[in-house]
Length: 258
Length: 248
Image (tube, rainbow over all chains, first blue to last red; front, top):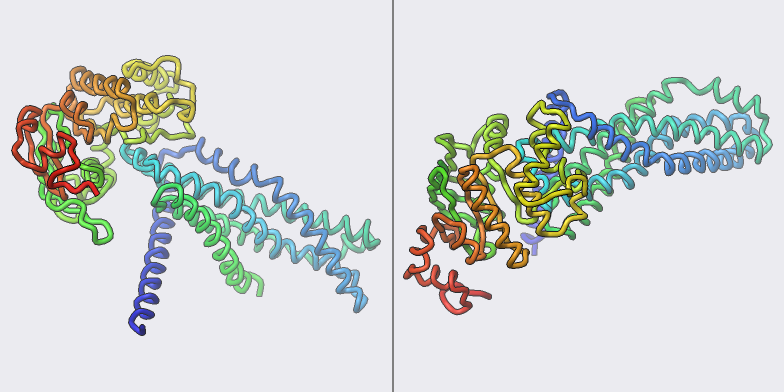
């Protein structure tokens, strides 16, 4: 019994170390291939479209409603000690520092990350990745690098949209539903919001973009076992990306915003 | 041309190849037969460096490719063409982009030139007017032909075929056989073909090698294999469920 438990823990530990190792090797390989010519512009733009442009509607809706609900919640909370005037800065700070980048990251992980892992996983089980290699093309260079670059660039851009839409949503609810004073709302927001808050959020978004693309590519590349394997890889990519985003978010917040 | 020396490979402690030795002459068509799961695909993947052996080596044109650096390996791979079992066409690219993929990646030819070349390769495999279709719009036989066109697009010296006739109707299978023979005649390529389709094997081979339990059991011409007195070879080529190979 006791040895069984030890074996179980041991095998899990080995598997975890193995996966973490492979993930970092993949990250390293991707980085090393970025600067080697030729640059595949077409693939990069295709991925930017898949990750960025196609996520835009969801991100806008998410940002809008998050901003709106934040306004309502801070208003009800702050009214209890007559601090309604501080609603603007609280909404702006929450969105730019936390909710904009994190929710965008989670949404893109669910949307684009899943699609990426499923596509690459299917390519793996149908031998398309092997076919790339036989055509003397490095799969990391051809498949992972464009996705990595697209994630790295598009996540901050999406976050900018989420931030902007979120603050507009907050403003609309505050001014038109909760009857806050428009001038005070904007004035307080701009007074308290610093550029560093926005930059910090965007930096986090860059990291989330890296996490999503690398984890999803990794899961896709190491898919085995047909359709079931593709399903597992897809779920794994979403779950791991989301967990890593939340964990990385805490540590970056601790480093950036103290 | 190709020397496979004492090749060993195992996956998760399961020994798949246990000392394969095989020599393929320049311009020869070597057919490797063997049951499902006997390691045929694993063997062929070693020849083009998709897998690294645990032990032993693969020597192509006097160069050991089993532990080559990736850049050198990719240079060498340009001499190869490989047809995969399911054709493995890139489903995000059109048919002509699939066929011209190698040219796009490794030559400075213009888009039009590559398209023309792809078109002529497609004609070689008997396909016309399909350049702008997506792979998902093709039938199984057409996909295999496109896969073949892609494999020969860079005028390879060595062709590897992974079960070229599996999953095709007998007529389409024979058409693929004819294509393989024609490729050899026109381009004088060295070929390794994996199959368990004996009709096809007899038709296209110069020699046949039987892979069993991770080793090459017997190598010989079609006639020699037909007359083989080895009970395992005999059972396999006659397709009987009774004999030393256990079906279940």
